[in-house]
Image 1: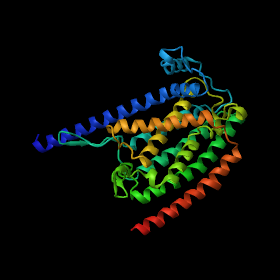
Image 2: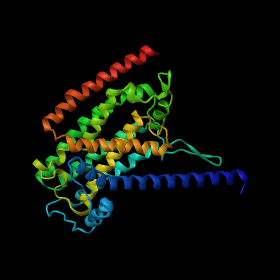
Image 3: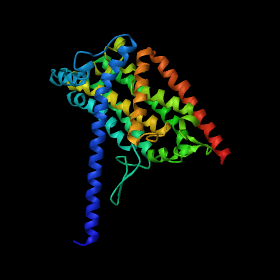
Image 4: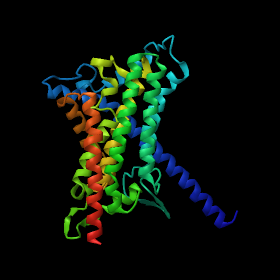
Length: 347
């Protein structure tokens, strides 16, 4: 074997090995965050309501996610006799899988060098990364609609239909809100958007980063609120409104299928928090090593989502649709026009 072929073979092996390590590391981190987000939510809401939250399973209930997982794993898995079996089984996975594979394009640190090979701290850098994210987010609604339809339950079907209308409305507003970010960064790559936020703000203040939350505050607020609506977080959890739809699209689910719906919700929380941090808060940039900066920003957003759940009541469905179509979409359009005028004037 010639030296050139040997070098090529070594580089290929190093590339594959680095890719597998990154995929495994990201998957483990996301799984741990998803598992302990349930514990954090119960603890935080408990303390906000002058309660203790989980306390009996482990120190301060730290083993509660493990206990819940074991309980759901060994519970009886019931499929209704009138349900469409194959879609009923596939629906939870159709919600969970897009949430996990979306994390692949979020950068979590600066490139590192191993020998002669540069390893990007990102599973893959697509030049249309944000379009990939929006496409994967749109796939999640199919799982919810399929779960509602396959259950052959009128309350589940109503939850699925609600989810379809809600996600179409707010996905449109969320997508339009981040167009202004593309106009400023001139790229659809998430790594490129993070790089565009590295220069000092307006080229004058050295210690103040050029995070787009400062130049695009309206887009930031719209994206965060629309993101909460897209992942069905309170106060936008109309597809599973217990008071009116029993438990909405997941009424007929039990055992691990039921757990998959909750895993998908918290995985989507991680994705929305990671995207908000990447698009508006400089991603992994900050005073600490890259991964730590990104995780701190993600945890801050997740705390905000939990805080909102503890304090804001659920909106009515007509209020939900009015807010999406008559408030958020016009505001996003106005922000695009204003940003375009500013960009042209500055040029």
